[in-house]
Length: 255
Image 1 (cartoon, one colour):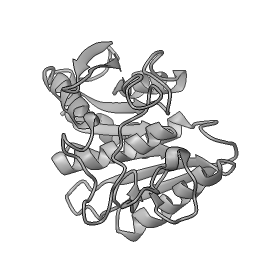
Image 2 (image 1 turned 45 degrees about the vertical axis):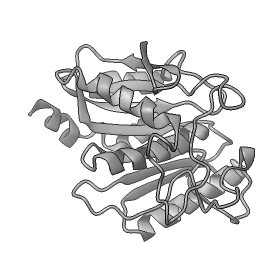
Image 3 (image 1 turned 135 degrees about the vertical axis):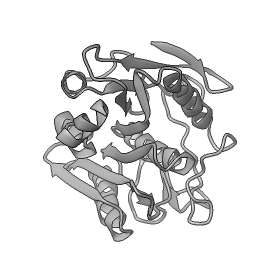
């Protein structure tokens, strides 16, 4: 466990660093759903994948008992084409949290490759994965090339999909949890979209992300299976889609 601060609140991350991996290693972030925390970081399949393929696994933790109920990510409510994805310190305490995380990783460049970051999560953690990936891309286009979602995709106001706490339906809202844009840098930003067909309106937002992201010219993969909300998460498939298990990725780590 690593203690740090977002500039306002005391925060932490849980870090699993495979000792036998070729270093510096890529970093995969996993974000919990609403009401969760970073305890017992990583399901067995994800930890085994980290050890097998040689990447660090970092579990983030949302503020506890600060924004309503504990463990909810501070994703900006108002996101429009005009505003873009809001990624300044004044937009969310998570911006300061991310900067502290990045600073921690960069203090050990011999262990962590802070230019090979990947995000993932489920439910509100999935939404935060998408928000974070777009902010990371805005801050430095070369530090992230892919993100993964499960059980929350992309919502636009008035789409008829009802998500908890009226996410994406406030006055002045347009998109949630990020504004979809085309990325034209050398890496791009791939969306690895996972969900289950019994996931109600959450599934519909995943379907829409699977439609909208490639329409913009961004790379994507979509994987839909049977089940409900955050059930039967295919961690191995997520790692494969992100490119963390490919020969090319492992080879690049040895250069």
